[in-house]
Length: 188
Length: 188
Image (cartoon, rainbow over all chains, first blue to last red; front, side, top):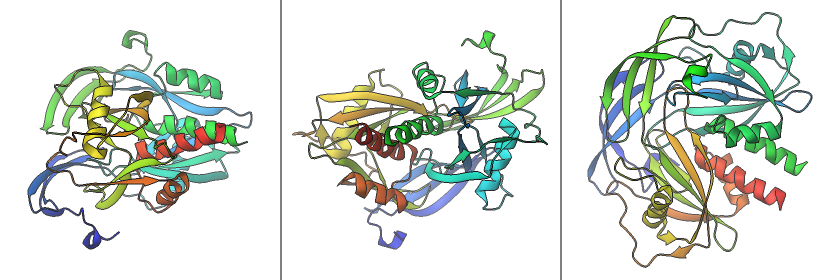
């Protein structure tokens, strides 16, 4: 729906960059609400990310274990990575790069499953999810980012559900991935 | 796992508040990586949120249509709201308040389904999802927040899947909710 057609459209009358970072920026906008009243919107600006749901030939899913400073805990997450500002629109290439860097794996079978905004109330971060099958070890693994430390772990569906209960698998894209996996099994 | 036991733990040696907002704050931390090398972490600090998966007695799910300034579009989302700083730990009360404000509905059947961090790489925002059944109209509807304008819409599962394809249902908690719904149906 175009903004002109929306009964709920908010007109932006001013915008100010409050923080410029390497991962995200923050803008504060002044908007005019549908009833003509001014309001303030705080916005996180992010270039977006890809997530991968990697299935092994023997029916496991591949996760990475790492430290997440925002929650001060180790997590198990499906592999993912942010889209660099200078990257084109080929998200499959971004997904293959992250599979190479984080898992040391590649695939010729990568299919887009869905995409979603992480926090639509204040952030424009969109994550696009791919399902990866027919995984192969890469011959020339790319190095991790210098500030990344992680361990690759393959889990069965029951093990993944246990790790959700334990709070180790605990983020939106990974909970989605395990729910997608259950759905595939339930339909099969 | 305690941080002392983690091979991946990052020690925080300095932290600076870069933005203080009404919805979130931004900190930049200096950390020491597991290999002793310093690095910078950019962090969004958020008090967390609840989301509700509301099922009507005739098998529909209840969504709210609203303008989302970060993506400059109308969305359909399951009802949700952020936890206020001064609110206690009773997330069911927060969920009932949001159901009242956004839907004009209440329930005596509210069950926690899961919870997840929205963007674990840089944000501590956690959203806790409740399933709501046996919905009732409230007699004393609380007013919306003064900057909220929305429309309540009830969709069948097929209609919800169409709205995902159309990009109108497009955020993590709502895509999760529809996938959860499909899973319940597939298992039934």
